Amino acid sequence: MSDKHLSSRFDVDLNLLLTRLLEMGGLVEAQIARAMEALNAFDLTLIEQVLESERRLNVMEIEIDEEVSNIIVRRQPTARDLRLLMAVSKCITNLERAGDEARKIAKRTRRIDEKHVGLTVNIAEIKASGEMAADILRRALDAFARMDTVAAAQIVRDDEAIDNAFAAFVRKLITSMMEDPRTIPVGLDYLFIAKAIERIGDHATNIAEFVVYVVKGTDVRHTPREQIERS
Image (cartoon, rainbow, N blue to C red; front, side, top):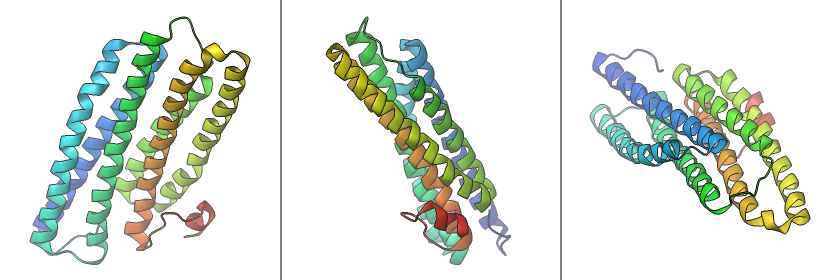
């Protein structure tokens, strides 16, 4: 968080805003966990929970963004405080989109359960990458709460493991579909699930990059990982 201000009310506003951000992040984490558990067990109750909770995320995004705008109007912040408020606005957008990806996982899981009875694909890489994506999102939110640039840089580096798991799964999936064309429909559904998990990792990485933006004043989006680590 930013340093203390002459206006204690400003500090209260910022702390409440961060609390709402972390609340939204916790909801997204729960969404991802439910979606992955639904994929593992084909639990239709969990699928419906994911789809229902996604609407709450949309409402939270609007509410938090509106509060960011109100604080900017009331307090007219500058420098790091303004960067923090802008970063919060961008973080909630990434959280909402990560929630959308969890919804996609749930919907594809329901489709697999309904349409592809008896057709199976080894999805060990998907499960592993799902766990990694959930972990780096949790760590990204923690880094944002503490404004920890070292932890943020590590998250950016760790996202590469999710990308590698996705690439490995795609290669294996293509081989499987070539060997047995009957698996193509279910394989494509699993491909969409794997891509959704990769995107969750990307959104977590974006949140980590906003930590560097707030603390250093440098926009490191689209910047090579090595350069972010040096920063």
